[in-house]
Amino acid sequence: ETTVYTDSDTERAQLANKTVAVLGYGSQGHAHAQNLDDSGVDVVVGLRPDSRSREHARADGLRVTTPSEATAEADIVVMLVPDTVQPAVYEAIAPELEAGDTLQFAHGFNVHYGQIEPPEGVDVTMVAPKGPGHLVRRTYERGEGTPGLFAVYQDATGQASAEALAYASAIGCTRAGVIETTFREETETDLFGEQAVLCGGVTDLVKAGYETLVEAGYSPEMAYFECLNELKLIVDLLYEGGHTEMWDSVSDTAEYGGLTRGEDVIDREAMDDILEGVQSGEFAREWIAENQANRPAYRQHRRAEQNHEIEQVGDRLRELFAWSDQQREPAPADD
Ligand code: NDP
Ligand code: MG
Ligand code: MG
Image 1 (cartoon, rainbow, N blue to C red):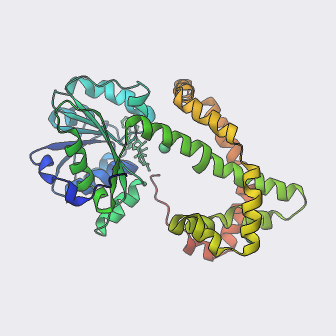
Image 2: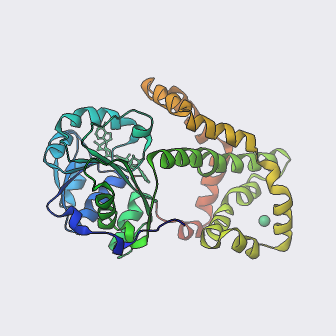
Image 3: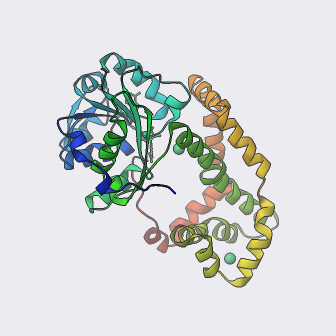
């Protein structure tokens, strides 16, 4: 039985007299820093000297310095720059980490795959809201929270769990509920989920459905509505009440057809291969090398995706139908 930690399981005193350095002021960084500040925690934001984020953090009333200076004065250092730049930022701040400090992450990639090797004597933890930063901020401001995860990779002080939970409480996560995981589990399930299901799986499912209909002579508009637009309605039902509520809400014909045909489009062996690539570190090595080579394959795939016909059809239809704006959550600029 999984323990769900809520406010009553946390001791905010864990953060008393501690300074938190939030490195990065993007999606997660701006939300963590402002929520901590509103919770009465001493916060300093660490950004590179030429950072475009500096004025945002200052405008939000926060103290800003460089990542190494912020680390030097902090007890808890939170890595909230993009995962691909974290190893370089870590090199810069490492000399300022002292025994008893905490190095905290919101995703386990760099620690799990050995791109960052923190010294002994430092607590290494993770507090990861299960949502983008603008939601972490917005829910906090409404007195609510975003569910989250926490994990302890290295517990030098014996206080790593208690401190991570106190941090989760200060950014609002324990208002919603927090569960414990490990760096390995968080990293591997996150990568698998985004590749096979959430980002990769779903976009390829939509494109394949669209192409099948259009190549068979159906109109692109009908194919777009059926394979992409309606997806939101189905996902909302799944999110609210699980598969049972979704099946209850669609017609019996949709239910019978879906239950008897859906699994034909799923290749479980391909999913196993994706998971194996994540577990073996093969995907991580590929992505690290891709970054070192300045992302040639990434750029190519990205261009191909943007040039897919469904994108032009979608742009046109989303403009033509006035209601689409009301259905859409406002997209934040930063993620
Ligand atoms: P962002 O891409 O939003 O971070 C941008 C920030 O990092 C900016 O302040 C930017 O400042 C700074 N930055 C970028 N490059 C550098 C650099 N080379 N040196 C110093 N600072 C730099 O990151 P996210 O918030 O998306 O992700 C942060 C962490 O949170 C990651 O580990 C991610 O996996 C994790 N996470 C993210 C979630 C999300 O929904 N986004 C959800 C849960 C976890 P500048 O103005 O200088 O460019
Ligand atoms: Mg991810
Ligand atoms: Mg239908």
